[in-house]
Amino acid sequence: MNLLKKIVQISVTVFAVTLFFACESNFKEIQKFNVSEFMPTGEADSVNMKYTDSGRIKAILKGPKMFDYSSAQYPFTEFPKGIDVTLYDESGKKNYIQANYAITFKGTDIIDLQGNVKMTSDGGQYLETEQLYYDQKNEWFFTEKKFKFTDPNKGLSTGEGLDFSKDFKRINFQKVYGLINDAE
Image 1 (spheres, helix red, strand yellow):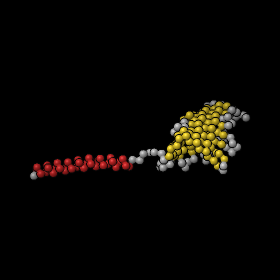
Image 2 (cartoon, rainbow, N blue to C red):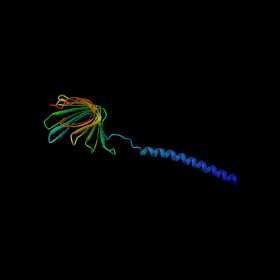
Image 3 (spheres, helix red, strand yellow):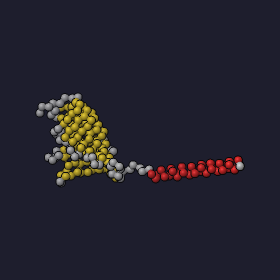
């Protein structure tokens, strides 16, 4: 009886080990099917987009590479190799923006510009910072990062954090380290 018990015990052990390895192999195969790679739904090289409203050009966006992740849980568009943007106001004045990287999340109307961000206006204002957000709906820019802002009439200002209108007519500084000449 003892021998029969050992044979049953060994048989059950061999069966369990075989079943375990068979399930492990099958489980790994099933895991491979469930892994969805984070891939863009669209990809473009040498992007040159023009945004219009009522027949007028509002903005021109250029970039060497664009990825569209519109099927992600939180859809977004990414410009991993930089971006050049020209914004036009109603009178045809322009603002030029360059950044090493940009991302915009669908439904937010906010563009996140990052890395060596430079902005120049037709009026001669010049801004440098590491990150700048643009609220397209309200035509408003803002950053919490360090900045360097030059205005031909008001001088040079450096600091941390500012927000301003697209036409630079309204500027709110948070921490300013330079001088601002407020006389016009």
